[in-house]
Amino acid sequence: MVSFADQLLVLVMLINFIMLGSSRMAFVIRAVAAQGVILGIIPGLLHPFSGHLLAITASIILAKGLVIPYLLNDAVRKAQIRREVEPFIGYVPTLLLGAVFTALAFVFAQKLPLAPEHRDLLFVPASIATLMAGFLILTTRKKAISQVIGYLVLENGIFIFGLLLAEAMPFMVEAGALLDLLVGIFVMGIVINHINREFSTVDTSRLQTLREE
Image (tube, rainbow, N blue to C red):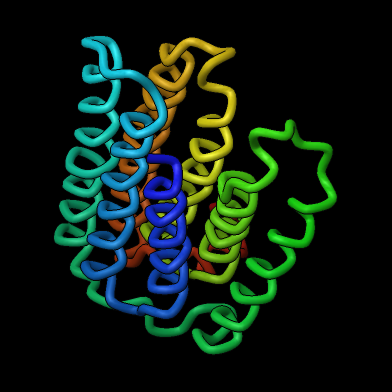
């Protein structure tokens, strides 16, 4: 079962590259939704089945795979944007940086003093690689919606690392993190709506200069 979880984590890291290399908003949103669904499945592979586990898994899949992507698609539709046309850093350099950070994640994970049962698993390198992918999306994209997606990917990286601590920490901790994430997305949605209403764009590079009227 754990080997299948590792295969899913490889898929999560491949989705990171898909998001780093794509300019189409709808496609990137579908990719982050697929990543959320995969991460929702993994806890069920690591722990004995129970009603509590089923409820948490269902809530993760619902939030990460359906509710948040729906809100993002709604924001994209209202803002009338389809692509991230001019990111701060081009897509090919971003992909290369993503590849470098992923390789470094594996090197760094080997240096960490992990428990013996965790040493040969992909959770730590996948977590670090996903965190760095989210950071790249957050810092290299101009559109506010793309930056929200970067924030989501960052949270996915934190979630992966949290799976290693699931036995020591109750699943309600992750449920609380999901609630914080949902609140953050709602707040960001409000901000994006106001930016689009006031400036007729969600390009954050145009907000560098503030002027007092």
